[in-house]
Image (cartoon, rainbow, N blue to C red):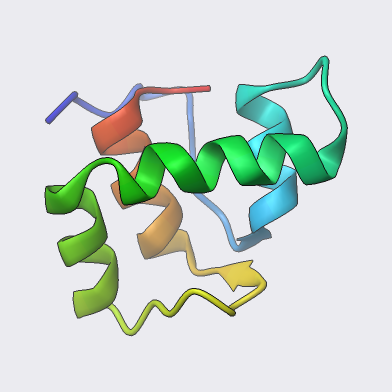
Length: 76
């Protein structure tokens, strides 16, 4: 797992907001789809997200969920 960048503070945000931080040059829908492929392609991350109550249809990510994603995928 990557260490959290001290300059990045996780906050509650939508999946598309976070996705656009990772993929700023594509559409929000494409960015979200790509982020979700990354998440579902990382079983340890998905397991930790599900332990927080995450489910596929949720639109907003909690700050804890954002922190987990960034810890596994790196700072956007």
